[in-house]
Image 1 (cartoon, rainbow, N blue to C red):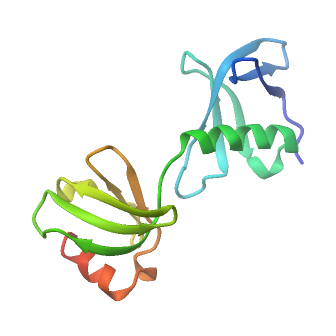
Image 2 (cartoon, rainbow, N blue to C red; image 1 turned 180 degrees about the vertical axis):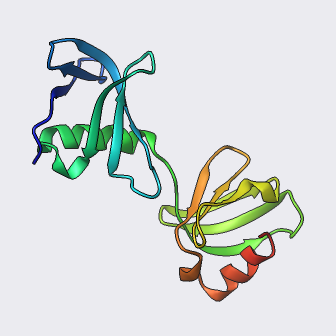
Length: 156
């Protein structure tokens, strides 16, 4: 466990409040992941209401448990990125098309308005944005079943 140079607590309004070593308090602090997909628990900036960084966390696991829990709770309430585990069907191979997918959070339908909304993050990892702004993650194309890979290949 690392000795942190700030205190973190929730106020009566449910906001995170960071108190620095100098005693300065910042209400409404928001944790921001620097690498939300590649290293989600490493490198987290604590940003105040004006958008300025007021704290830094190298690794959540190294924090005192109560501070780590507060940061994880806040991140969980803000992060929503379902992972596609299977592509069940695609309405059309021309865009816009509706995809029926199975995710780690249940079944979902997403509308792909253009092939440019499929972004390759690495050789095996994709980020797919639907028309509502929800980001769907394909963590590893190789783990998808054959049918899913075949459908996906039509758009890549």
